[in-house]
Length: 219
Ligand SMILES: Cc1cc2nc3c(=O)[nH]c(=O)nc-3n(C[C@H](O)[C@H](O)[C@H](O)COP(=O)(O)O)c2cc1C
Image (tube, rainbow, N blue to C red; front, top):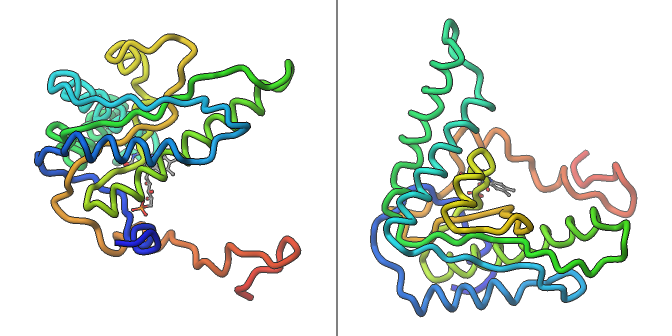
C-alpha cells in the first residue's frame, strides 16, 4: 500500500484481535514515527512501548475508565439519572466500545520530553511546538501502521485518569503524555463513517480558503 492509500484508508480502530504484533514491525513503526518533523530539531519526545501483559492490562483499564469519564462528561444524562447513574452509564458504554483494548498486544505512548531550548519567557511556544511534534510522530506511526495492516487510534482518554497512568509506567513529573494509542490487528478496518460522525463531517471545500479568509471553495 502506498502512502496516499494509507492516508486515505487510515481510520480510528477501536476493536482489536489478540493477534501478536512482531517486534520487528513495532521497531519499524517507531523509527518511522521518529522521522517526523520536530521543531528546531529539538526531538523533545520519546515513545514508550507497553508490551508487558500485566502492564498493558492495567493500561487498558486506565483508558477504559478514562473513556467512561469522557463519555459521561460529553454526552447528556438520560432523564431522571443521578450523576452516579450517569457516570455508570459512561463506564458501561466505554466497556462496550473499548472492551477489546484488554487484549490489544501493544500500546504506544507519545511523550513530550522538554528540552528547554526556547529563550526564557517563551515556554508556552515551546510547549506548543513540542506537542505538535509528538502529534506528527504519532500520525507517521498511524499511517505507517495502516500501510502494514495494523490499527491505531489517537487516544486522550488517559487525560481523565492520568495519575494512574504516570504511576504505571513511572513517568517523572516533567514528562507529558499528550497522546497514546493501542497498536494491533483490527477485527476489521472501519469503512465510511458511522451516521453520527458522517453528519458532522464538513465538506472539504468549506474548510479551504483561497488567498483571503472567508473565500472558501463552497459558496
Ligand atoms: C487530538 C485527538 C484526540 C483524540 N482522542 C480520542 C480518544 O481519546 N479516544 C478515541 O477513541 N478517539 C480519539 N480521537 C479519534 C477521533 O475521534 C477520530 O480521529 C475522528 O472521529 C475521525 O475518525 P477517523 O480517525 O476514523 O477518521 C482523537 C483524535 C484526535 C485528533
